[in-house]
Image: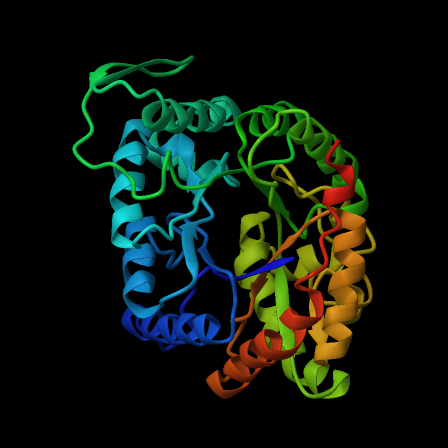
Length: 366
């Protein structure tokens, strides 16, 4: 398995954006020291504070030496995708060849409304961008030409070439069957968030892995899984420390994405969640309440505990959900920095070594 420090970079109350970014750089410096593989950031808009890809990758590259860095990911439908081609090439140079490129379809219609983008075409747009990136960097022609369902480009020069050849690794983060098929054929990695039940995702991932194995790609696929993580010396201390901060983030980050507002929050949580956007399916059934830490913990929708407990939970979750890249969101709620940094350090020093040789995806590559 591989391991990522994943951030959504929401500021705490009373913090400035500068304060939050400064703390994020300290988190990444520590993750780099304790042998995390990746540093990934979400890229959203109009939701308090989310880093742009260029801000995150440039700042992180200046403060780390080993982490592979990237947006997870670009909401493709909000951009003219030719911009991504230029930005990817430049960021790969800024990171000295450590860039990973995440493409997403988008989570909330509100971003599309404000940008004047087409929500209904989000899947097709993301798949098109994957093909465009591949064509731009592998065609061998300069200038290059591309004909897609939404965009056509003719005689496009590139002033900057990526360091990684033919291009940085591409991820198409989706569980939509047609996109998984396209990703497997093109050699793009994939992944999903804990909202989707692992048991539900596994058949789709298995088909993706099997198709990948038929393509003769020169490298193996990565399947990412995003969830909150908190590690402490004992299970009891971990639960006591993490619970209020984790639930705060569930309400303010993921709850807002699901349509919770200050005016309906009490009613919403009392009634149980109702999925309102793609991907928020059976994990939000009538039994689940985002304020119920025991429910989240017992169903390993979050990973909280001692290093041994977290390693065991991750092993079982990966085996069920067929993922081999754990994207841990460590900064939650108003967790004191001392606790936050201890959690990252314990994860790096004790959890990563216990799982680094485990990969549940390889047996499905046929």
